[in-house]
Length: 332
Ligand SMILES: Cc1cc2nc3c(=O)[nH]c(=O)nc-3n(C[C@H](O)[C@H](O)[C@H](O)COP(=O)(O)O)c2cc1C
Image 1 (spheres, rainbow, N blue to C red):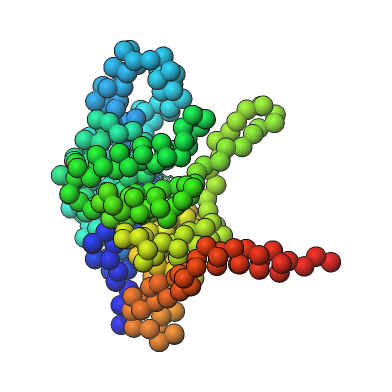
Image 2: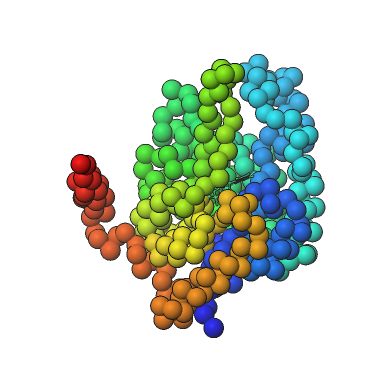
């Protein structure tokens, strides 16, 4: 028997495959299917800050009492009634899921402001979540906002959240920081247990016929993974948090590469949307088979064996690789 077990956020998982937050997780039957097909853990779909605010009527208050700018910004949001879950239903759903399956279930919040909505995290904890993932999906567009100010905002948010809950906390981040390693360390100092790298920012396109901006959500491919591999490799053993890959896990090779650079878990959505939930079993068996063929007894043995900082001067190493890649290109 090959031991695929791993630890993530202090929780023991039977293997490193995790279903990341997506509409698939809105249906309890899907989660049961995921468990049946061998998934290690599930992150539920997100509850958004705006949904919580609406429920608590703070949003109404903001609309009537607050600035016009705030009211305008809210008008961009989809009709909250379009969401399948109100926050209260989310808590009920979480309790149901916890009763129905035996795998760890991680709740998910999606927001950016350090305000009253964070109280909702307590409800997720009380409903029995094994951990909480906070997705900070934020694109700072104001020119008067320095990177330091943006990072401070994140840290304040995390500090507040950490005060609210005792369950393990993971933060899902985008890749656009001036110094990802430094900022990751700051998050670890605030008591973050895991980093989920990286958010895929949706990239709108332009419709030249309608002359309008159109939303565009493309599923990932394995090439999406490379940025994640690089950063997990850089952060492994440098930052005192667990590391989760999200973005581009499609094959057994993707899982193995991620673990080899130091990931505790590999999260997936696109592949499950494309190939179906039963594909989890193929990935689990394939991972086991690879380890068996290469004479490993456990997945723990390959974790971090390809970490980047086997070299000491990682900045120089990155520059050298960059030059090597550019010089290796030959044109006819
Ligand atoms: C349709 C769809 C809905 C998603 N909803 C959420 C969400 O509610 N919260 C969240 O944190 N991530 C959400 N994600 C992002 C995924 O959890 C995941 O991080 C991302 O798709 C990258 O992984 P992948 O390459 O395996 O798809 C969503 C992704 C898709 C495709």
